[in-house]
Image 1: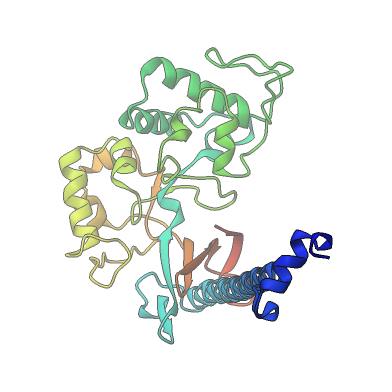
Image 2: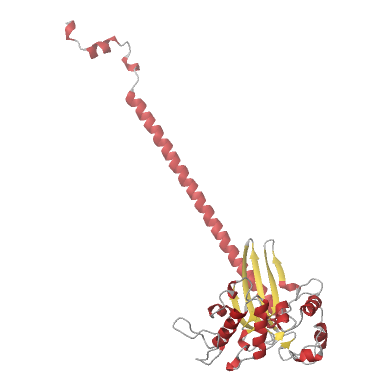
Length: 334
């Protein structure tokens, strides 16, 4: 009888309480459930974080977009105010709306710049203005060989006569086509042979304009130091004149500027200006056909701000529009 029992049967019979034995399968099931729960919790947390980041990103983008629109509106408002007051020293050119919105407008005389479209009107070179431009570029550090190439290439470019070729300008080719027309913008200089290095420097365009029909002469009320020097006026005389013209704050177009007596002849230069420049009558006669004073053409740059966002618009306008408001000749967003 005893020899018929197996070893497994004996083990069962010898166990006082077989129901209390640990179950390997049960422990495995509990561990697997716990791991699944933790994994599900991790996935849920990741989804919540991603959702929160997406909402935050959308809110930030929406807020930035609103600031952009508000800054553009502020810039346009400043431009409208400038057209309404049309005075560079008006306190209304600086406005604030709320804590973080506002505009600042700067008005400068456009005709204080050298008008490149007057170098060869109708194909006839203005030798006096060409010489002024040559002196100006020389003051800016352009070497003689480069200077001849730049001047001749520019004259070829703006001359309406096709086939005209100045000595130091390159011939026309499949890769180089002068427009033979007035410049449409100052940036067009970048296309002209020899001007690449000069136009790559910061502030290279600050003394140039291409306004057609206006700015026929250089406005001494706004001409920069280098433009005045290019007219052949000595450095000491130029510095003394600018100190007087700009007033104590050293800035043109502000309330403390020296008020020169208006000339009886519109567009002519008041005797006070001639005296301030330290020029004798015979010296002034050499440039009197090239200069004017207080031209009514202004460059208006309006910068609008909303929060940390800024947007700018620039326009050139002239006094004496048909409706009594200044006539806008150009407008662009910067």
